[in-house]
Structures are given as structure tokens and as C-alpha cells.
Length: 79
Image (cartoon, rainbow, N blue to C red; front, side):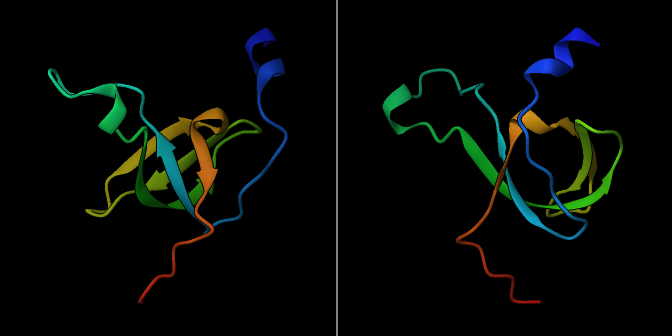
């Protein structure tokens, strides 16, 4: 319960496009050239106040905390 106090105060609607924060980097890759935000993921559903279920390119479901998500303002779907 206490860990949720640090959750960011934002929300995403079903169908919104988001980026996922992934701090892990490949071995040998310079941190300067590492992209910490990956994807274009689509929000599938809201699990709880701080957790969302997202879909990747291969329609793989993934549950993530809101602190790892950021809105994809510059992404325009071609669907």
C-alpha cells in the first residue's frame, strides 16, 4: 500500500498509445546511445489505480505500473 504513494498522478484511457520505460540495457552498449523508452504500446485495460495492461506489437499482454508509462504524443497510428 505504501509504495503506491509514489505513483504519478495521471491516467490513461483504453486505446491510448504509450511508451514503456525500460532501464535495462544490452551488454556492451554505451548508455549514451541507449533508448530508455521503448515501444508504441496500446493501453488495453486498467487493472487498478496504479496498474495497467498494455498490448505490444505482437498483441502480447503485459501488466505494468503507471510509473513506467508515458504518453506517446508524437505517435500517429496508421490503422
